[in-house]
Length: 229
Ligand SMILES: [Zn+2]
Image (cartoon, rainbow, N blue to C red; front, side, top):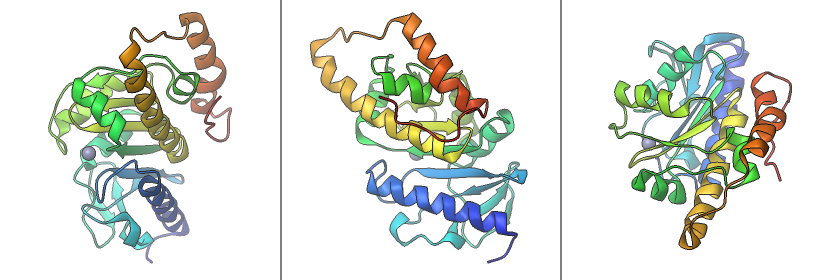
């Protein structure tokens, strides 16, 4: 393994969450991707390779790239969604990890082009409120990264129209938590939708959860993600 110890640690951390993606069925086969910023070199990112099954992926398969998209270390090509990752890291210095999933219920909501309103406490504490769907752009394009930036706003996740989920966090742990919570919330929303209108959490309470449980993670005042309530 070439590169300093921090590259190795990041590769292993990305691999750990990649395996969780598969175990939790947030992706099918080789879909989706994960990246994290290298803590001691914010211009470098460890990112999953293109078209590689997660169950046989090895730490050295995780590619080290610069935020301008150049590969620094690794034998495999980075994910085809690399612009979505690198452009987000350049635009958002506060983002330390990105998780992109193709989970079933979230894809159903993304296909309809609707959002998930703040109907569950866990969604607000993990994502900062209800989330919206970014307009359609084809995967792998810079246009998708542009549209996603607008849809993320001050949230930890958004849906990608006719595609899947993008989750961000101050760490990859937080981003993964947000992606996982979005799938659970999407599933609950689709079930509740049969009895619509689905009641939402009162705006004042949404604001309180944001302030007390979501925002502290971004300001470094809370160590790890919680699957709140
Ligand atoms: Zn995708």
